[in-house]
Image (cartoon, rainbow, N blue to C red; front, side, top):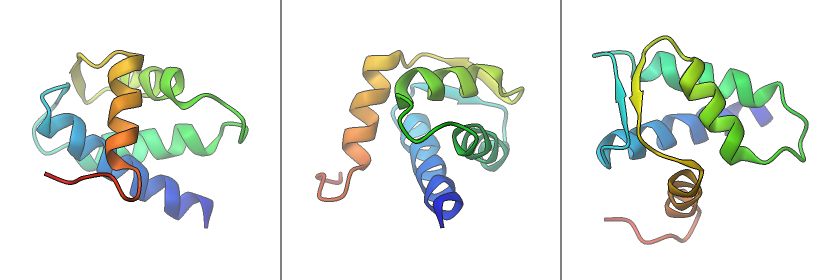
Length: 88
């Protein structure tokens, strides 16, 4: 169950970051980056702070060309994806 949640989170986060121009990913590789992110997060203890770990995972993903989002921008993206957040 946890993996399904992480997969969903990673897919939506990647989509959001791409849409907001906060990440550049090699063409056609969004799913691979989301998979790498979910795998990385799945190996962490439950109490780990997500911001730095998301940055670490994205920077390590070979298909990420550039990441412009800092930890603060990632926290804002998490908030935008939270249930009940306004959707544009």
